[in-house]
Length: 373
Ligand SMILES: Cc1ncc(COP(=O)(O)O)c(C=O)c1O
Image (cartoon, rainbow, N blue to C red; front, side, top):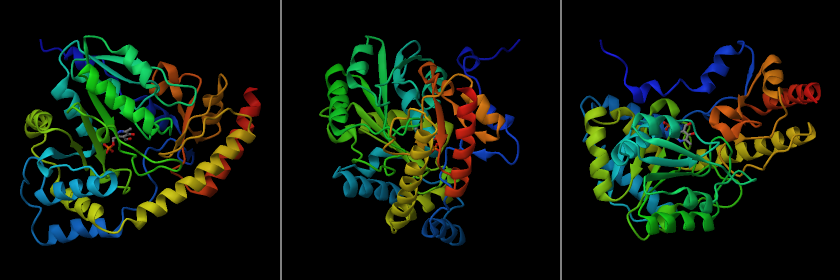
């Protein structure tokens, strides 16, 4: 009889979904992992015009249209002074597929993947799906990832370590010094650094730097996407950039699993990347204002909360029973344990929700916190 693959049996449906399913219809949702802004008009138009002109009826090249890959390369040049050959980019179905490609192409059964705990739920699951062994590592008090922790965790079996800045679920942003260290570790240990930069543009304090800027070997690959930057989660368009020999291996997986990213989404992404960037700046300003409202509210409720410097999440330390108390009052938050064992005792709140709703939620959180104290 056909049984299920062991790799897949080890993976369960994300704990975040369970929280959503348990919530009532009029709950205030602070569990959301996507911006609450519309996709910029010029990005939508890019897709509409391409559809109307008959440019989206056929497969594109496996890596994606040349003009999209040129737009991706131009963005790295503009923002990081990095020269990326458009041949060394693959357009993917969101950042999610890009993460999958990196791990499928680099992890052999039994090899280890180091990633932050608490960290984005896909790192553990995609490692297992690739047949690898997850090696979650703890964070500093401020919820950033210490390069020294990564270096200590490296063994002969390590295939990949993941860096995610700005981070989900913490909102933490790694410093330039840390990014230099991650690049050095990738260089010196000959281990691949997978830098997940899907929140690269949503930074309030400091600047986002990439280990790719500092690496001297070809041991860094970068995953990013239009999803968060341009509020395009539904379009499913991301990418991976990296050295040619790695791109060629990832392309083998992408070619057979996906053929190419959706053509309309590729045209929307090209328009997003090459058009006016003001909508991004406006969204980031709105997120920063909301972050300050949420930080004040949580601190007033008496919670200890590291200041997130990017993305749109905040991760306070919470007392026992806090998440249930908040969920019972119809505010959806995600228990930190959904993001790894070290997330226990924390909760993730997303502020991709209007300010008035946030204020209502903070009042409820204040009552719930008092009730569990
Ligand atoms: C850290 C991180 N990486 C990757 C992704 C995947 O994004 P996409 O929607 O582009 O697949 C997400 C989505 O929440 C994320 O938070």
